[in-house]
Amino acid sequence: MSEPRQVRLELMRPAQVEAAARAFPAVYVPFGPIEWHGPHLPLGTDALKAHGILIRCAEGFGDVVGPPIYFHDGFDLDHLVPLLAQLFRRLGRMGFRVIVGVSGHNVPGQIAMIERALAPIVADGGVAGVGLWEVTLSRGAESDTDHAAKWETSDLLALHPELVDLAALGNGPLNLDMRPPSGIGGLDPRAHASAEVGRRNVELAAAAIGRKARELLASLPEDRRSFGIVALRPEGWWMI
Image 1 (cartoon, rainbow, N blue to C red):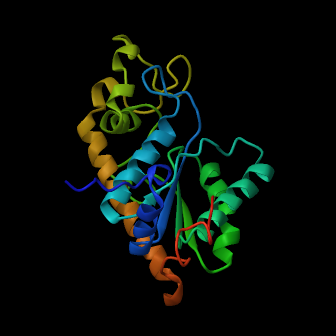
Image 2: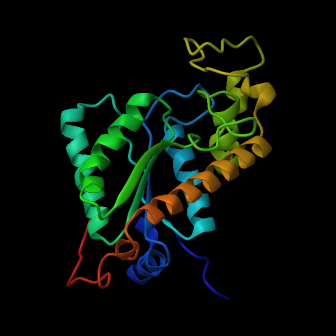
Image 3: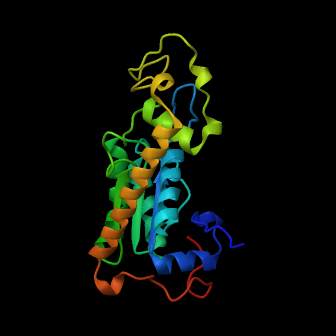
């Protein structure tokens, strides 16, 4: 029996990474903070959903997914942005031609942070990159986001059902205005969230991100669209 194709960079062996990058040299980097998401969802919900969507994307399109980064625009960006820029540059030196930073934390500052970090390597012309929210490209009637309400709860029910505890919300009135005590913003997840809604959201978001990665690769000069190093081996590359 053939081994299932692995897409998570930290779990891949060198030959697996090289084969994936030669087929399509794109890498996705998920972002999200450790943040309150109601009493029913894990604190890492934003990065968990971004990571899960990107895994589905890579499984469908043949790309590679980096491990989640739990930093956000609330940190000192004068220090954080150069650090992320180094990470992106190292991914480029690893041979990737497309870098897509995807945040499950849907605030403008988060995307601005990713875009600022990508700017120096994109300016060099050898790598194309973009920062996105997980639903930037798929937002509509079947794909959207909120804060720990219908959409994010559905995403986690689809991706990590073992981490969701709807019973923690109780049966009484629930404020849905982002304020204490619930800290939830959107439609009541007890009535509106489901694994089916989450699966469709994940499917649409993953497909849209994959298409964007292909557009980015096509935007590069033809001689810069293939795996960027001779081989993934110690003589030419050692670590990110």
